[in-house]
Amino acid sequence: MEKIQITLTVEESKELIALAVVEHRDLKQALDCGKVLLKGGTTVSRISEKITGIPLRISGRVTERGTVAAMKDAKHPHSIMIENKNFENVDSRFRENICSMGGGDVIVISANAIDAFGNAAVMAGSPGGGDIGNALGGFYSEGAKVIIPAGIEKMVPGNLTETIKETGRKNKSFSYGMSVGLFPIAGEVITEIEALKILCSGVEVYAMGSGGLKGANGAVTLEIQGSRESLDEAVKIFKQIKSTAINVSGFPDSLRECSFPSERCASHIGCCYKSRDMSDNKKTKIGFVTIGQSPRTDVTRDIFPLLSKNFEITEAGALDAFTYEEICRDFAPKEDDDVLVTKMRDGSQVVIAEKYILGLLQNAITNLENEKNDIIVMLCTGKFPEFEHKNILLTPQKMLQDIAKSFAKGKKIGLIIPDESQKPQIRHWWGDVDLEIVAASPYRDFENINYAAEHLKSMNVDVVFMDCMGYTAAMKDTVKRITGKKVFLPRTLVARVLNELE
Image (tube, rainbow, N blue to C red; front, side, top):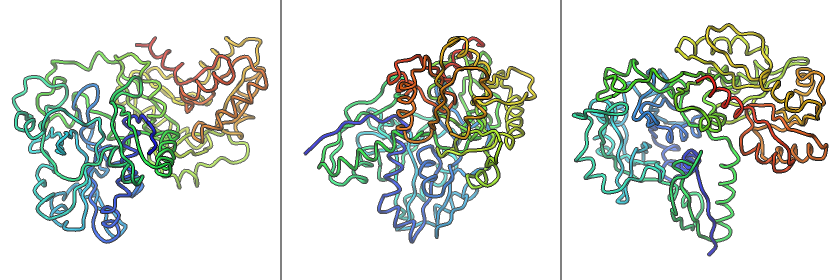
């Protein structure tokens, strides 16, 4: 028996678990000849994206501010029923849809807590647990199978049965966010361990530790034992997960968390922000605008650790309202168009003409200012015309370019850009500078970054500028290691400038 070891971040674990649930025998059978109900949560939303192509609306969530909700109650579905290859929003009749299910059908609902005894529980911030609490009896009385995808990070000490008895949402004098209670759910819990056993036959999996630094907060380190064939399959899965930009799954509007006052305050109790025992007013609000779709967690995961804790972040994307097919059909560049490269919410790359999105970007900026953001930041190094704005609008292109030019005055700059078609316009933007330009998309295989770095090394550049917000800190480290040169990364430069505006 051979062994391998892997560490997965929280979002990578959710991706692994989602891959396994989609391959679960009972779920596949229910999709073929029964009903499947998906109840919203970021892990189940990821499963929904794989089955239906759409994320789900996220309601409650835990952030560093505590147990909070969405800023507003979007109309996008929180729970969907899938039957005969079609799906529908069942939020308005959740209980009756639960009661219509029976043997052979499957309910997928995640948990906020699991324990070593196989128990699971969901936090409830609304009276009676909201729709789920009211329909809970139907989860079990009608005979449907319940699958509970939940990462090892949700493991809590003790016995949840006892914890549920001792806790509740009422009579708390202080709470970071809405006061919550717990209600139990029973079913087949799928952690990373069970997920690997579904995806790779014959393996044994052991959790060696949890937690980590930087983006590995809540991560899990696993040892997997098995035959060479099964371990090769596991490594293949891990490489796929690790080489893909993985965002928090959920309908974008619902990922913006509440702050006082909001339309959700009426049903919440104990909240220290609502009672004004704690104030959000000290935070500077920053709105990030992407030329693609929000949220851009692949970008912000390198930015957030560098930012002051006194910032509150929201995001908006120019293409949030469009499908991949619509973008490819209506936004594709023609000859002589200025070209931009960005990504969809599912991680896929799209190439668009700048002229088609200028109005959409203006709308996103205006909407973020209407939401009382003090600073708006463009998450793109492209060159844009002036936008209308009342507050600070940070457009990185000129600022970052001036920094690079100043540092590399009289030297040769190696420029890494996303797409070959951008070379003429980018050379024009940079003007009379000694440039060596190489294309390597941040949204493709990591090997193209290695190739770009090797090329710049062979051309003996003096400094490297990675001219796109999509490039990651890990990519910067690779380019720096291969070239041996100083490397400028736009996303982290922007973060350090923002800290001066606190």
